[in-house]
Length: 178
Ligand code: MG
Image (tube, rainbow, N blue to C red):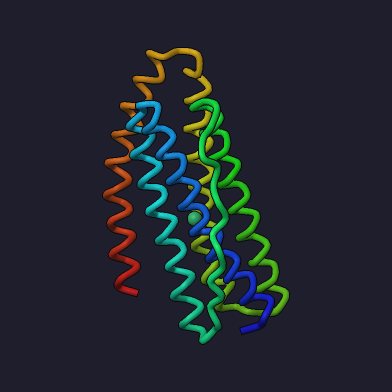
């Protein structure tokens, strides 16, 4: 594999684990302010990010590339409000998309069709991730100054978490079958 493509994939492998850490930190923050639905939802997200990392881990090995496991950046420890955390989650997903797109550019430059095809899953996944984070952010904005609204939204997030956990479980099985 071209060294620039490999470098990009190793960075992305790290970024997916970093995403899991960011979402675990958010999960802990929401739990600390008794928004258990948000907490659960971010916990499911963290788990999904680790699956993303493992997809890349497997791919690098399949291509006989050298894995470069790097330190995982420390996430923020807390946020000033439920809205601030939701804003950060959305911004984080946008950064992940940019990163995937830049590796895709590198793969194209080096005519690495396999990596290009491999990254398509991530490109599509990021469309969903950004849309989801944005919808949640807009909902938190609607109720930011209304504790009753936040309470209702937290119940909704718990339902979402339960539904996504089923989806996450499926994704895990897909990964194991690969
Ligand atoms: Mg991801």
